[in-house]
Image (spheres, rainbow, N blue to C red):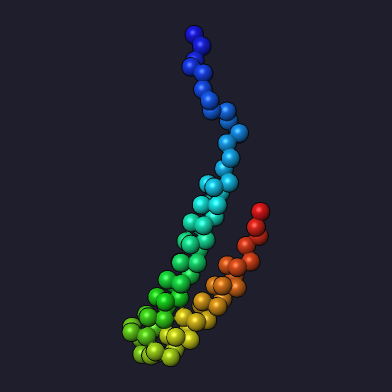
Length: 77
């Protein structure tokens, strides 16, 4: 018994919008995680240690700059 005919043909659908959405979500996740990690480092050093605000701000800034340098490079397709 033959199955029902379908309009779907594997591999013929335009997926550019899905690819763009996926790239956007991954970018937001990557850069958002970096910002949160840098802010968390700065706040922990500022409030939870005797290092103070200046050491926390400098450490958070260094982590942010290093993260930008390391994450920016990713080889595009």
